[in-house]
Image (cartoon, rainbow, N blue to C red; front, side, top):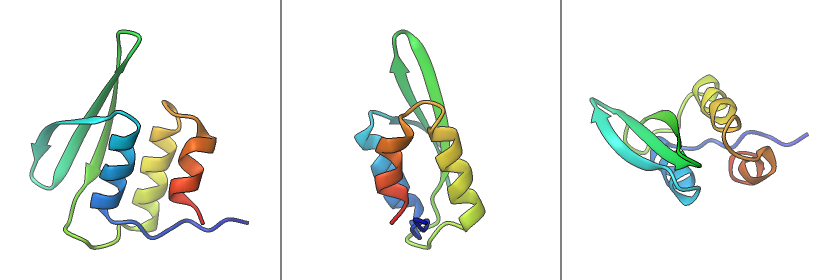
Length: 81
């Protein structure tokens, strides 16, 4: 069974930007991302606390939310070993 990688907020931000998400707002340490597909806006939030790895539950939550908008096969190679 594949294992969830230990990713920092910066790494997750970079992965999501590869899929077309753009930073629209920064509130404290949380980055709000948006992607527009077929005139529909898709939003995600990513906490960015330097290069510290995100907690496993937070990472799973971001993955689950992103998989609503993106193919799980595309995401899996970036989030799992």
